[in-house]
Length: 113
Image (cartoon, rainbow, N blue to C red; front, side, top):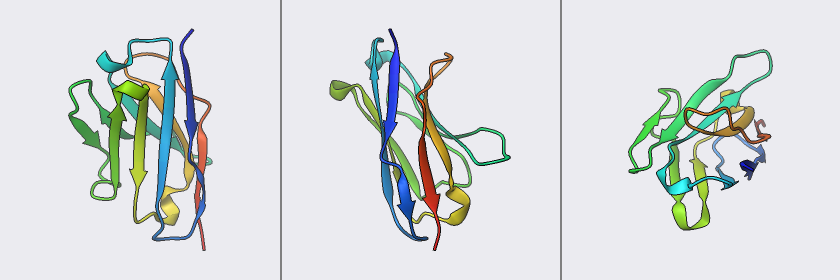
């Protein structure tokens, strides 16, 4: 059974940092592309970052230079390092196995003063 569990969200002030983790099980993680998405209240889900099995990455324009996606295949885990957080980054963040309908339950990130 495929399982994904996000963690690391929380409340931070503008300019702060968080690192999100997504622990996976049930699939051959090392060959899978992974994505981080987010959804703010009343907004559509949007892609934040993607990392392919070979390590190449893509980012939404809104987070380029601030967020970094990475993976540790030995731990079956994908990460999202978020720096210089802004209020507009507030959302529930989800990880996803690319090209599948496998999602974690999400973790809340709130950026507020």
